[in-house]
Length: 282
Image (cartoon, rainbow, N blue to C red; front, side, top):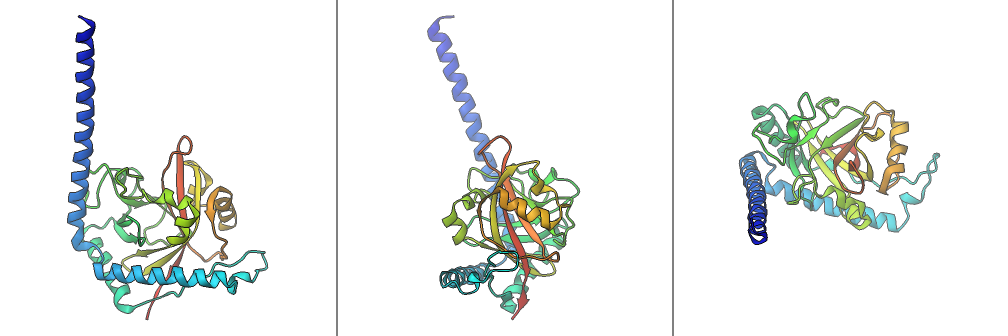
């Protein structure tokens, strides 16, 4: 075979591989869009999400102003920490109940669904799944169909009502910007400060998430050991944090970590962690 012939074959093979990869990527995007469309009837309504957006924006503005005036933040605790200024734990009754109703409907149709995670001004607006292993929802949608993007899911070692002191969620860092692709952005201080609150609805209640750490760690790090005492786990988070805010906590508090792949080193993970605060109607 001539050199020109070999080059032609090589070019044809390369083109076929590129086309095949593009078709797979296109197929995955189409499948993901189909799942998103089928999920619409279960999602919190746009009006509710708009209300959460406004509440969150107001909290960020108010807490930033309080921090600037060094009011509560200037008071040191016995441990020498500066307490984080948390916002009100009250949500409008209609907003809170609508969120609970949405999750109840989804849980009734798909029992593996245990919650809905929403972080304003990000792509994170997803049901939270849980099953008896940490593999299934890596490549399955909320309805059990095969999906490369997978789902947001709770570590199977955690019970399904977020009652563990440490609750760990996983999802992919998708190159199309979906799922947990926004989590690594929290390693930038300005992004962290602009997105420091999230919301978690369950069939029973709604939690506000007060994020305080964006950490970088390996996939076998102590951060993933939910049996670790908070007195050891919290300082370890700060040791691994790229961005953090000081917190105060007690043994009765509960926390949630959002984990996804990142690429700073082999098997790197970015872990966004927050304190769960149960809301009241009002």
